[in-house]
Length: 163
Image 1 (cartoon, one colour):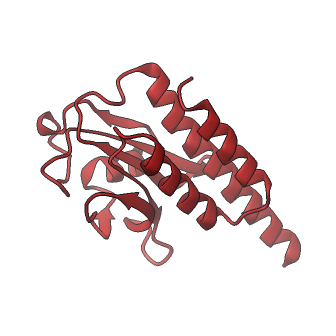
Image 2: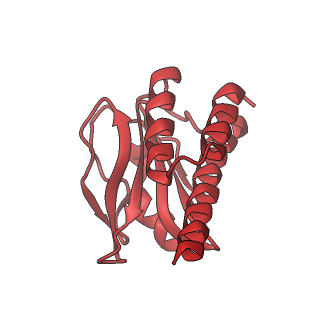
Image 3: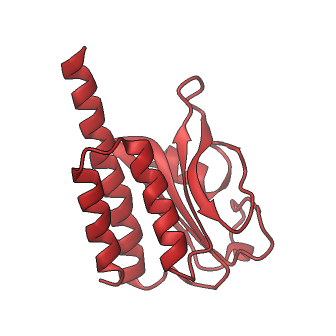
């Protein structure tokens, strides 16, 4: 798998007991810094006050993203509402795509789940066509979402024990 060193770093960071928000920030920053084809990396979180909306979470990138996305809008909304990975090799051919930058050519949105329920979406956008078409790239992005999901689940379990 490409980027194995990053996946291992993220797993180690998660095991260190870091809060999920810090983990999401770390993943966003490190991926944006180390993978040149990943031009915007970040998380949209299901809004605790309105479960039909995603709000911008930790992110890193070369353009300003949408601060809120409805679950019935965009690839992120689609990923959150269906619980399935959504990938567009060419966003110009994807009617659900919400444009944040006219330079973006491809995007992948992966649901982050706790006990089978989507609580966030890990979103990566690229200025290159079909960036996430290779199975190895897709697996890397999916793995990052799973690492965050596991950390969130652990945080929830710890909060329940403390209560």
